[in-house]
Amino acid sequence: MFRETPTLKLLRTIEDLYRPRRGEISALAELAKINKLYLAYLRAIGNALRDELLREEARYKWFVKNVVEVIKALNGLNYALYKFRKPVDHVSVDLDILTSRSDVPKAVRILKEHGFEVISRVLHRYAC
Image (cartoon, rainbow, N blue to C red; front, side, top):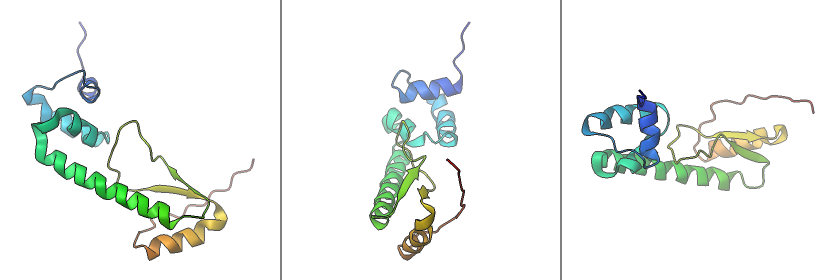
């Protein structure tokens, strides 16, 4: 007999193919957080965790606002956002930016001037 795992229930909830029972809502919410699917999960279950949904929507709005600020600040530089788009909207804790080696010092200076923290300046050289 097939038993649905919590992960399958979470994914099916996000796809609007499953409605969690009252006792499953919190456990699936924790699983969604771990897997960076919290916003998508909260949107799928609607008002069951309304206050959480409102907080997460506010965090998402703040994240998108910051992404737009970074994009505007780096205008004219050779860069790309890495691991940015996901199949579902999510609130990230950071923004990974790849830039050409020659633009690294300028990108770092610009981002710091805009109040952002540069966590890593890892430089890799790849031969083509």
